[in-house]
Length: 605
Image 1 (tube, rainbow, N blue to C red):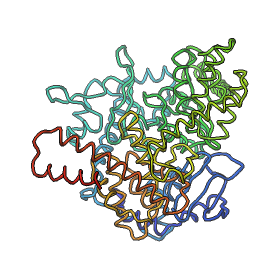
Image 2 (image 1 turned 90 degrees about the vertical axis):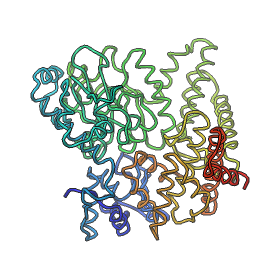
Image 3 (image 1 turned 30 degrees about the horizontal axis):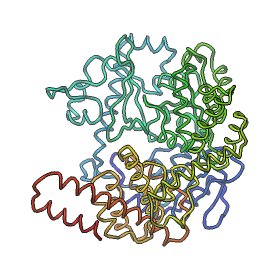
Image 4 (image 1 turned 90 degrees about the horizontal axis):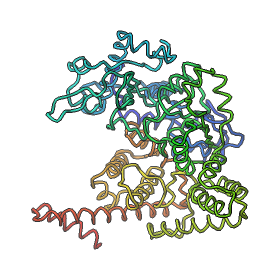
C-alpha cells in the first residue's frame, strides 16, 4: 500500500513491542543484571558481547558495534525493509498498519527526490537496452545481463532525461535530487551525460544518488551525484544494499576502490565487496560498515598512491577498533585492480589473495617501515615516534597494549619506554579535555569505546560543526548532551537553557529541538521511540551510535549534570557568536536590540 506510515503509529507499535521478546525468538538470551546478553548474531564470537536493554528497548553489541531498536533488529537480522519490519511487528501486535495519503501535509519533503531518482533509474535502464555500444562496453568488462539487472546499471544519453521527467517533477526537484544543475543564465542542464550509470542505494534499498562513468575519452572519468539532503558521500557505501540482499548473514566485507570493482566481483560470484563514493575511507564509513559486520578487508593498489591511501585509512581505523572488530589490509599486485584480477585469474585466486591480507597491526608496521628505515638508531627513533602518535589514537586498551609490544619489537626499544610516551600523550589529551570541560570532570571515568560520549570532550564529531579545535570541541559537547537525552529520556530535560539552545540555528540545535518535542508528546518515553523519529534524518546512524555509547556516569544526577554542563557551554558559545554578529551589523532595530539584551543577560547569569 502506498503512503507514509504515521509516526504516531510507530510510537504506539514500539510501546506495545518488547524488544527482548523480538530478539529472544531469534537469539538465545540470558539474563545479565538489568539487561540480557548473547553471542552476537551479526558476527562470530565465543564470549557474549551483545546486550538487549528492556528499559531502553535498545540492543547494542560491544564487539562489532551494531545497535538499534526492535525495528532495526528485524531489518538487520532478516534483511527486511523498514515497512516490512513494521508490518511484521504490527502483525505480532495485532495492529493494522495505517498509511498517510500522498497529499498529507506531513508527507516527507524528501519523497519527491527519491521518486525522481527512481524514475531516472528506470529511464537509464531503458536507455541502456537501446544503446548497443554501452551494452558492448559492459560485456567487454565481463558484466552480463543478470548482473546489470541486479545492480540496475543504466546509460545516460547526451540528453533526454529532463524532458522524460519534466511532466512529473519540477525543475527545482530535479536540481535538488542531483539530476540537473543550473547554468549561469538559470537554464537547466543534465548532470549525467554519455555515461554508464550506477544507482547508489541506502540500506533500505532507496536510490539516493548515482555514479556515472565515461566510456569514451574525457574528464572527469567518474562523476557522482552532488551532496544533497538525501545523499552524503562521506556516509555512503556503494554495494552495501546489494551485499546484504545477496548474503543473509554477512560476516565480512571487502572495501574496494570503485563501483566497477564491486559489480565485477559480484559477476564472479563474490558478493561481499563495497566501495566508497569517490572519497577517502573515513570514520563515518567505518561506523556504517561495522554496523553490518565485525571484519573488514581494505583493498589498495600496490603503488605509492595506494600506500598513501592505506596510511590515511589506517589513521581512521585505529580509533574505531574495539572488542571483536577487525580490519585487514590487502595490497594488490601493482597494475592490478579487483576487476582485472578476477577476470584474468578467477574467483579462487581472488579469495586466496584475500587470505593473505595483513592484519592492521602488521600493516601499521609495514607502512611505517617504508617511511622510516629501521637499520639505524635514528631511523628506529623516528619509527617509534610515528608509531606512538598512531597508537595513542587507539581506544581499545588491549589492542593498544599489543600494538605497543609489536612496535617495541620492531624498534628494539623497551616496551616500558613506549608506554611512557603513550602515557605522556594521554596526559596531554586529558589536559585538553579538562580545559574543554571544567564542570563535573573529576567524578567520571574516560570513555571505553569509539565515538562514545562519556564526557563532553568525547571524540566523535557530529558531522555538522566547523573544522578546527573549536568545531571539534563543540561536536564533543553536542555528543555528550544528545547521548544522555537519548539514553535517559525519563530524566527532567525541560530547562530554560535547553529550550534556548534548541531555538538556536544549526542542525544540532534542530535535532535537540525535535528530541524535546518528542519528550513533550510522550508520557513514558524510551530510547527506541525517540530514535525512530529520526530514521529518515541524515544523522540517524550517528544518533544510533550515541544511543549505544557507554556513558559510565553512575547515578542519574551525574548524567543530568554532565548533560546540562555541556548545554550551558554550548549556549554560552552561541550567545557570544550571536552577539558578535549583532554588534558587527551596525544599527540595530528594536527586535535585534531586544535579542542582544536577552543574550547578554544569559551570559551574565
